[in-house]
Length: 208
Image 1 (tube, rainbow, N blue to C red):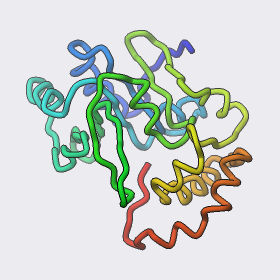
Image 2 (cartoon, helix red, strand yellow; image 1 turned 90 degrees about the vertical axis):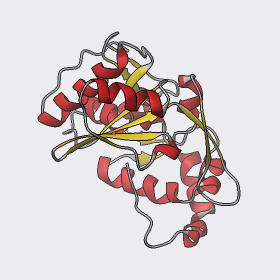
Image 3 (cartoon, one colour; image 1 turned 30 degrees about the horizontal axis):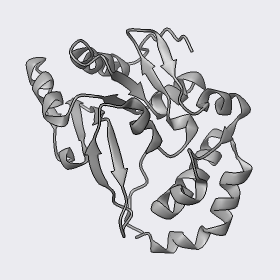
Image 4 (spheres, rainbow, N blue to C red; image 1 turned 180 degrees about the horizontal axis):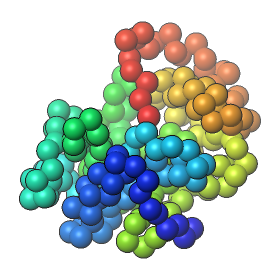
């Protein structure tokens, strides 16, 4: 889908600066997830995430070159946070996730956008915006789901939930926030596995 993006806030202008710092050397760099979803829904952009084929150390190097402050506290998960005053942009390297006995996966970096997309939770959060090509890459018909106002898990709903029960709470939260209905197979998986949320600590943060 073709999409011409124009930043509309200081946060978005900072996000574009970070994006441009990476994309010239790593063409597989995209705005991703909730930001792209909210652009299509014409909602205000509160959070910006960037996905890139660059590895974390490469991201750090180009942030330094462009004099952009950053935090690398989550580097083991492949995430570097660019910082400017109160604004923060999370930059995540493309990765695959393997789950064991806990909801915290082992991370392996990849150069593949399609493999990165598979690890995401919902189709509407798996949209990748390329500013250079002025297009949105949509591996799982997330744009169609946005038009239908429905929330749908990527792949097996059962597997997504059993790997990380927090996705049950995320699904309910997104459905309420966006006024979306939960697609029937996704809802059935939530209903049949709802007791799994008991495994979650009350202190776990629910993030975008």
